[in-house]
Image 1 (cartoon, one colour):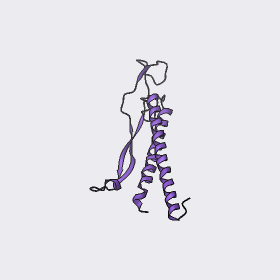
Image 2: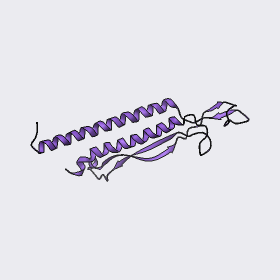
Image 3: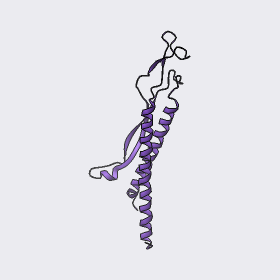
Image 4: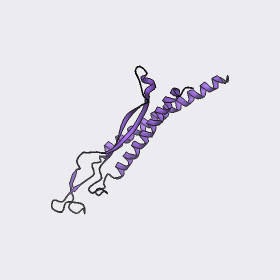
Length: 147
């Protein structure tokens, strides 16, 4: 088989890898949703992954052969502002105003991201499983053992 025949499996595998990384980032965001002190100082800042299409050198009308799936190209900080709450008794609160900067993590948004990543992972797994079944059937037919 030509290597292009395996590009579908490669695309699915890269998608699964990217979504697994996305689930790890979301899990880390959820775990730090109430962390008011980070190693950078200040509250935890939500993280996001940046995905980009991966192309295998597509030229002209040969676009399909050039598809390569998705790559994680960066992990970035979410630039949204930190929500402020009044909590004068907290050790990280501003001593003058009593305001406490909280992480910019919104649990409902993280849960949506986690479900989306999980479903996308499952779809890629299903595509990979279908590809494997087709290859197995093709090999069985080539051996003359179609039953």
